[in-house]
Length: 201
Image (cartoon, rainbow, N blue to C red; front, side, top):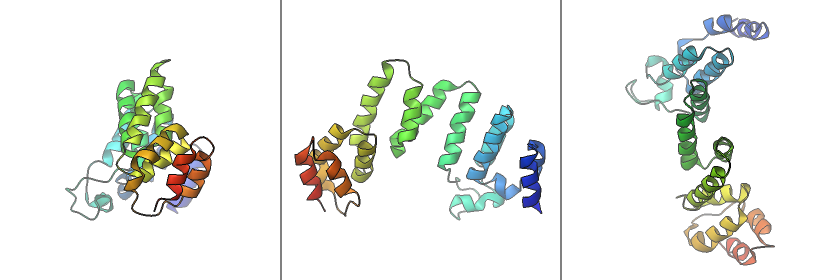
């Protein structure tokens, strides 16, 4: 019945009814908190959106599942959806510099192309060029070679990807599922890097 009423609330665009159906367990879920915060932001209810996100930061028996099974005093595992909603909240609160700082921190951690594109899109002209150079250098130095190479190939930044192969291919310790595809894309301009990639583990 709760699911049926929730669908009716959606169709009627009745946010208050939808919110009244949220359970304590759902409030403790980072992904659900993010979805709830987004609805509130769309409605212009910024303070309530912050409360929704912060509810998932306070471990309790209701959100124990988000603490890796540890006691309620543990730190909940936040999710990409929660982090993205936090950025949207900062923007809505006018904290644009903090939102940019968080975007960069998430890119540094995950090498997320969408996050980097969002970061670059908000920079003044010419600053984005310098920031992209910094981002590509960070990616090339990332501890996980496969993640780094995947990011550079998909951006695309093939020159930097070829340089990464030449410099770090000896770090490969397990098969790279996409190496044939990557090598084919590098072969025309960077044949030596393509060969070394194909010869890797």
